[in-house]
Length: 258
Image (cartoon, rainbow, N blue to C red):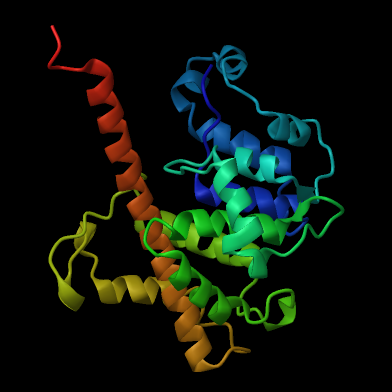
């Protein structure tokens, strides 16, 4: 069976759709994500066979059937995270984050025994940031972004919108979809693929924060930097994923044995 794969931007749109925050319906988001990965099969007219060979997890099945989902179990959040390209989500890790490492930001389940859309977004953000930052740095960043845990009113940007913003920023920077910025050089003069520079990346991130006039200049700068850190962390996730694939292939093939 083929896995159902989504970009982070796809996942962000899905979370917002489930939260009734955008025009698209959740099923339409899933359909578009699947369609992007099966262009050749669609052109060949083999839509049904292609989808029949795609693995549909229980949480996806709920969404496809049109059920109203305002919250998720940890198992469901981990299942959604495992659909995201270059991601290495595990249920055990999320359980540790909820119980210990990021308990102050996640708290108890907010919808019965399940976690809200914002809580799910925080878990997915942690998964991305941990490819670049240690947990203490992530906690300090969260204090700057989200203020007092449990109070959404002092957030510089709510987690679900933060996740959507940096996912969009990454796709903007990675326009050809290969997951690589091709960073070369050192310092502020570093150049990237297609002539991008570090200053250009900062300006790109700034476009997501410049209009937030309710924030102070320092707050907008902090948020801009956080978006850039998160987008670069996705880049790191790509390299981690590639390294794991090559290690697994090497160990499986075991070239030294005859």
